[in-house]
Image (tube, rainbow, N blue to C red):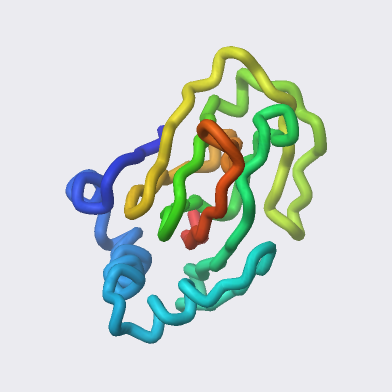
Length: 162
């Protein structure tokens, strides 16, 4: 079941034993004097930077321009839970249970990734700066969708081992 909202709100709803390292890192991303803040703010457009946090956690810094919904597909992961934290910008993320979707691209174990076709039954989330969404393996999610017009997003996607 997906969880979403402001960082402080979500923090009160999660297991710190599982997610504590990611949320500690998010605190550093919010501190403009930290090295982590300086690294993510300098992420170039269409760049993806992987930072290993430990054996079970890593984070991807991403910077991109949001897209029309028609240009997106749902995705899911079996090995990792996603925490998608918007550092800057705004986007729509749709979410739907994988059981309710048709597979577009079969699961690739090496990439921990499957794609699904769109549906009209998904829930839409508008995620803004300093907000996040947590997606579990049963949550197919479609991020990167523009709100009103295409805009730049800087995001940290935390991968937490199941």
